[in-house]
Amino acid sequence: MAVHLSTSTGPGLVSSGSDRLLFFFVGLVVAFVFIRISVRLIRAKVRWWPGNITPGGTHIHHVVFGTVFMLIGGVAGLAAPDDVHWLRLTAAATLGVGAALVLDEFALILHLRDVYWTKNGRLSVDAVFLAIGMTGLLLLGARPLGYDDFLTPAETDSATKTLVLRLAAILVNVAFAIISLLKGKIWTGLLGLLVPVLPEIGALRLARPGSPWARWRYADDSRKLRRAYRREARVRQPLIRLKIRFQEFISGRHDLPD
Image (cartoon, rainbow, N blue to C red):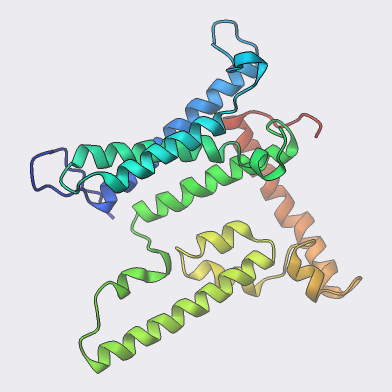
């Protein structure tokens, strides 16, 4: 999908959703890259870099600033008049910056302790990558669950029947996405809300060992569970190691003990 970005700020101009989404995406990516460079410089104890913010000995994590940025960006986006184009775009970018700072410490929020550089801290990088992936798909024209089909009201019986069939297809797709998530396939399930074929693939294939689906449906020492472990070792783990190397090339090594 081509994204048309207007730079005019004259009266009567209304910011499109694509414009705001693009600014959110840029704010998300730039803030994530910046904060990861910052924390890696702090970890390396580079003298010329400012370092952590610790007034009174209290380390203020950047999730705090992210929360403030998200609040400012969200409220400004809601309050800004439709014809004030630059303000709505600025609010979208601010929201993206805040989202990056919050998601970069998602693991800290989940565990309620500082696991930033530990193995558990990789969850934060996964969260940011997932947000970037889903936002990027939206920019390319993907639409969650085909909601565009419901923006135009049906005017005939035939159109109503078509709408009902589309709704049924969406519900089936959501069911497959939920099954994919229960099978431990987080990326497949969530991205499948934008790419309809993915949830079906994830739902029909074996569950990952240790996932809720495997615990509920695969008996101990069953053939399916043994196949799941073999697939995990042969296919999944090499892909995970490749993903981790790529992520840590960008975000730094998460190698401290928990």
